[in-house]
Length: 381
Image (tube, rainbow, N blue to C red; front, side, top):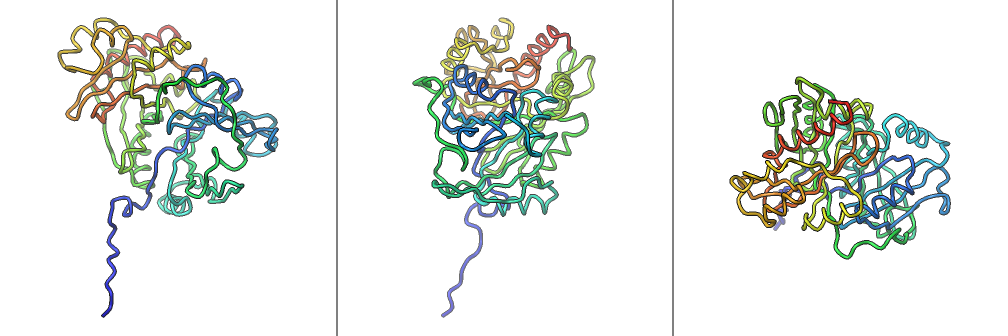
């Protein structure tokens, strides 16, 4: 009797031609990685876990790896450019200021992911290769996305080191807080030029098999003066979510226009960080010097009427200027920092979810009016 083997995929993940495990790291090119690492340790409560620099063989760059839960940030600056990569980093910081160069994605098979992506039209930047040390082997590859941003595809299933081969474990810069300020990357938002949003949405649909999760157009994201459009793509598990924004025609310059002008092109606008206790997070970060956007008290006068009961009382939300939104699945609490560098470009969002998988649609008008007030102070509205 011949045994019949059923090759039908048992899960959606097995059927996915581009499966992902989650975000691996957000990699920043910065002018001074040592100082950036100190800022994110003290102000964001992150923990330095790994380092690469001249002390352990890196003659061109210095890199600091910080974590909070599953969230991982890498800050890299050039010591002395001697290769194409070093010159690229130098030029990137000169043109764009401190910013995100890589939204690295962990995948179960970097070789297969790269082959699929390139076959579907992605621009390959780095073909699959291995890095090895005493902790095991990592397989890496990289493809291009909007602007000069890349997605490094990381297979670390055979590796148990602190980050990657070439990095050594590092002691914390400061003792991290006993309670984490956040524990994961919720989503990463990209800004692209007018007319390019749908092009990049189709890129993620075709290349990575991501599906369209949310869409905000027209009056969804508009104030009296400015407007933008946004579509959100995500993998099947919703672990990796990428909203893509583009400006819309309006009376004055939108936040996307301002970003594109000062960043010098498309790039990552903000990183949303998931927290289980947004009140404790905001209090700790504000005490450490992080500046958050503020909304008028009037926002809270009617908030309870449409948001209903939340874990945090309205009076405390009002005190801390935390926004709330509710949809058919639940509610969320969120707050946004001001830009974390002199250029009005990269900023962060802290988000606490209670069932809702939305992005705060009910807050868009109040939020963008708050951003416009900051733009006006800078003379960029």
